Length: 253
Image (tube, rainbow, N blue to C red):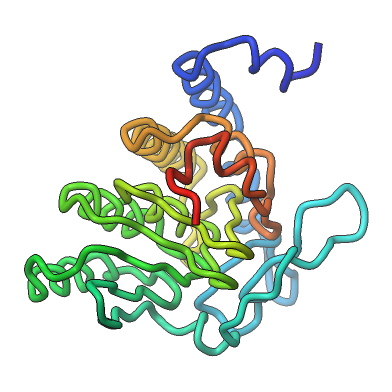
């Protein structure tokens, strides 16, 4: 029996618990990465990772494949320079707030200030982001749910890496046709490398926080399993059918 077949035999609660313990198991990967990076010296390349705020990595990683990496199923409409900048929030009319750009540390505070300033006018958050800070993404997502807002990824807009955590916060979640939504493993993007013990602790804390948040938002555990299977320099691009299956989307466009 394959892993996927075994998981299909469990209910979502059991799958989430399985995902959690699998994630704990892969914390050794984080430790290996950190040990390797601590040990690297001048001229040696670090192991691959994806950071949308830097200019020497692609804004959009290639798709996860067994062989040659594939391009994303749809090219996002926004140019790289727009997606790479720190996230901004723009009111576009009709109660829609556009959140566009990379999720830099501090994004959640700026988002909260924007929501506070707009009062009850904002009804929908439309996302166009290659991802970034997990902590900020979860905080933004929680505020979206608290305010009972909807989330939207428009046609040819991008929501990748930690961005789907924000998307999950919407009470109503819509991905339009050709929306580009992808997930992968979390990773430590800091230039300061922690000790192996700190890396293990950080990985476990992040694992628990993400798993609990997705469960609280009503998202099926299969989404996080897809992220787990995908290294940080690749993306798993979700199909419309998978978004429905994992309950990431709640409304048809």
